[in-house]
Image (cartoon, rainbow, N blue to C red; front, side, top):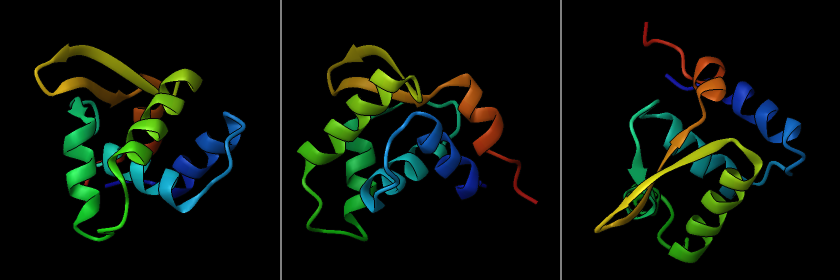
Length: 98
């Protein structure tokens, strides 16, 4: 389960505005906790609810989060780099399902 207040606080601490797109990307990444996912996987999940969201926006948001330390980039594979939440953010944003 994802704690949206913790995600919003993480964006504020990183001095990033809390836009809807940033929250969507961060929430989708938080759903899998420490498991790394490619930008294409995250984008595919987000497009189910928002078909107009371009891949370039998803990728730029992930790069911004990586630069700010919210997201860690793992070794690249055939699908591109894999992203996961930073360890600090996992502890605060991901809570066990009831």
